[in-house]
Image (cartoon, rainbow, N blue to C red; front, side):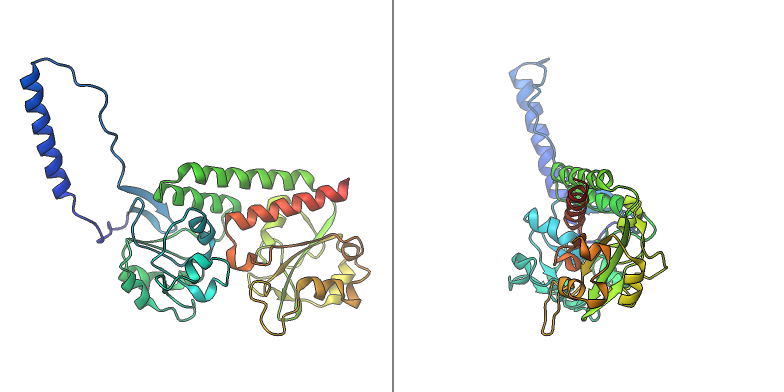
Length: 335
């Protein structure tokens, strides 16, 4: 178990007040008459700390911490929806998805994950830092500055859906939103079950990632965003080649895609969240490609495009929406 965080308020004063209250209560009870049974209307004590298990082990953290720094994009939508105020965040990798944080000058900017401004974390005086994901390589640096630092991003080698549910459950414990966390997890389970049910079990699928005007390959089980669908839904790969976790995908020729003849395409538009100068959408790259015009997926319109902000969000809401989209697309093809 890691050392308990140093950012801890003393409970001595509270304990002293509680002791005085008990003494006063005892005295008044004796004055009223000996042997009187206490009533059952005692005030319920609310927990001020909770012990969780993050990616590094057990840690005790405050419940409803006052000053929160969040660096992991996969938790941002949940924090946003739960109206959790942030003291600092990496605005450079958040796009325009969460203006509640990025447009607020009171929220300090930690910057980009390549060269983060760790001084902003110190300035925020955090009771809790939610690190990890793009900032995982800076864990040791961050925890040295803010001992109450946790990482909840999905771990490599673990089931992606279960990892997102684990993350959500822990966030529910920390922010006293257990019921809301359960609803998010239930919605994920329902969407996944619907997607599994809607797949016919035989249609071939290719995962693609478009970036910088190119169409790249998302390998089953590995490709960013798309790869996990193959293992979760037991999809039949149209292109069963190994790949990497490269966020831009792996190089592949459109001729190789055409030769594979996928009946379905599932596509992550990596540049869709930013749409900078020269941006070409995934739909334009694929549907207007002369080399891909005879691919069954293109001819039949059997293409599932991930939400344009997926590359930035990648949390439980993003994957729930993806599985919902896949379920609707597969079901529509069956009918």
